[in-house]
Image (cartoon, rainbow, N blue to C red; front, side, top):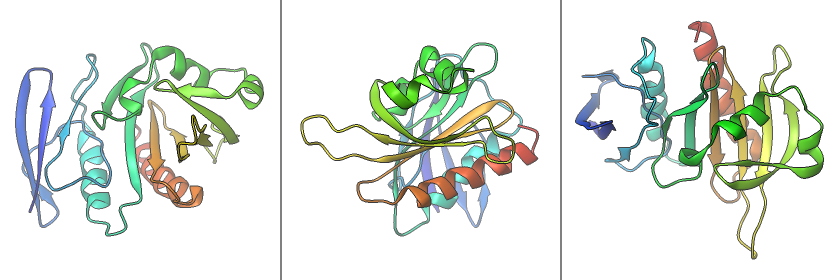
Length: 192
């Protein structure tokens, strides 16, 4: 039985997951969590019909023994871009509407030269197929500051959201890409 402490606005609740069934649903995203993890939400967070997809993603990846991921987020990009759910205290919780605009914008060349930022973290773009039908992915790598380690990031696009995933140090980008792409594919099939 996995227990997650989730907070939405001022409401706090414990969601328990056992035998593949959850007792409550909410928008949430986190990967490779410890057995109890508090999650934070953007101020414009809404409960969505397909919120359980996010939660199952958490639970499935939480069960993985390799624990390859350190940060994840679901970001809405339609109308008013905002972080719907993210791991607290990590990079993606700080993603701004301007950063979202760069990711989904029409100018696809400037960030190959200048890079881009996600939650204030400078990143280099490795491959951009985010707006290409059938692909919907962008692979990035954080830029090192002061000799700090760098991390692979994948961003995937769905009808309403961007799914972001950051690997731990030394984790190959292909592993992160596959996990992120699978979640996005599932959301797209659900018309999300």
